[in-house]
Image (cartoon, rainbow, N blue to C red; front, side, top):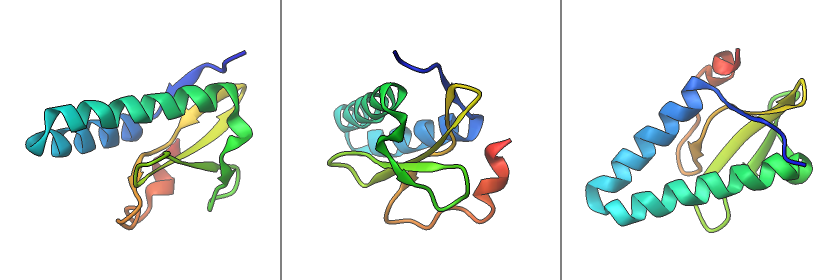
Length: 101
């Protein structure tokens, strides 16, 4: 059974910003990016232990298949919380863990 997915505002902002950036060159590629992210999150909602142990305590990380993106997440009170979406070639923003509240 799938867990309820809760997106933190920062994760939604990350998704929107990345999609907008990609869409500047290719709206189709942006749509495929969003589809890949949503597909990964759907998978995680069914199999939350699929991701590797996260760098921060209590988190896990999912590498999006065939994409240079990382989704840090955690399971809290039975819900899957999407914390952020990072491009793997960039350093995570300083203090990103403070956004998890």
